[in-house]
Structures are given as C-alpha cells and as structure tokens.
Length: 228
Image 1 (cartoon, rainbow, N blue to C red):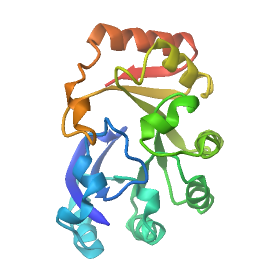
Image 2: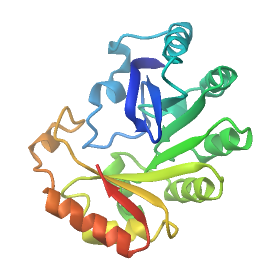
Image 3: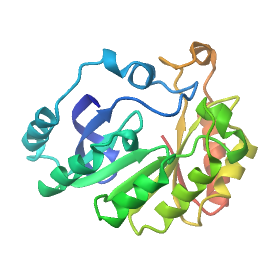
Image 4: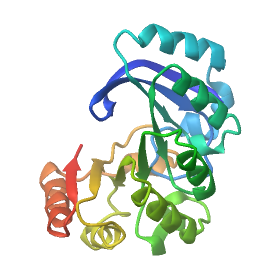
C-alpha cells in the first residue's frame, strides 16, 4: 500500500517537521484530484516495504517529531493501525489525512489514542457529494466523521479544494454550516495538473481575490479560515 515517501516536509504537519507517507488507492475518484496515478494505478508506482519506510523515518528523527500519513485514502489499508503503533513506539506524533468516508476506522484509531492530528477533506456541500467524489457517497458517514473529529479532543482541521464548477460562495456557506465556531478550515486553490478527469485540466483556477473572498465568508461564519 505504501507508494510514496517524502523525507521531510515543512508544511504538511502544522508546527512540526515531518516525513510524509503516501498510501495508494482511494474509494473516491474526485474528477479534479491531481493524484491520478496514486488513486487509479497505485500498482504502477514503486512500492515501499514498511521496514524500508520505518528505517527512513528513523533516519529523519534528527529533524522530525511527527509523521504524516496521506493518500489516496489511508483508512482503506488493513495494516494502518499496526503501522501507526510502530510509529508511536518510536515516539512520533502521527497526523492522518482522510476523506472521512470510513468513520468507524477513525473512531477506532482515536479511541486507541493512536492519532495526534487529523485533517479531513470536505469535498462539497453534502447534496453534491456524489458528483464531487466521482462515486456514490454515504453523506451520513461524512457527517459522522466530522462530528467524531470535532469531539475527539485532537488537533484537527477541515479542508476544501476550491474548484470552479464545484465550489462557489453558496457551496462555501453550506460547508461552513457543518463546522463549529472557531474551527480551523483550510481553503486550497485548485491546480489543473494530472487530474483524474482530463477535462478538469481545462478549468481555470480561482483568482487570489476570489479565494480571499471565500476566506472572508468563512471567517464571517465564525471559522478560523486560511487560504493555501
């Protein structure tokens, strides 16, 4: 399942330097996703063994105090819990990136105190999730994951990739209504590169002014919003 690795990142784990582990495969096929090969053809990417990755992470301990596990969708991996246990035994903090589609996995990991930070993507307003995810999605699972993360007591954030045609001011307002006051919410501008649906590479991203307008709307809704 491990199909990529970054030795150190300055931005993926807020406040920490951290290696990033990429897991292949995803149960979503968001047309605007720019990790096409990792999602659709992970078998074509060079695999890493757990031992290889753990050795490299141990080497990074000189600088790093945490590890980011991302994808793809990490919660699909049956070996995720055991892998995290090994990371925690090394004294590392663990950040998990997820699409929130499998709340039972998140609940299990949080109850076992295996996570230190969770970042969940919110793709769109709930009523438009199937189109944004490219598959049929149980909206109730998305809401359950949001609620679980909010009540977990863990550091966390929610994120949305802002794609013209999928996200607008009304969509942002709808997503804001799912989140609690003061919630950290990151707005990421769309990049038309290597998308699952090639037609999305023709989409012109929002301007910096438009992204700032979204941020202001989120702040007005009581969220701690930023644009990246």
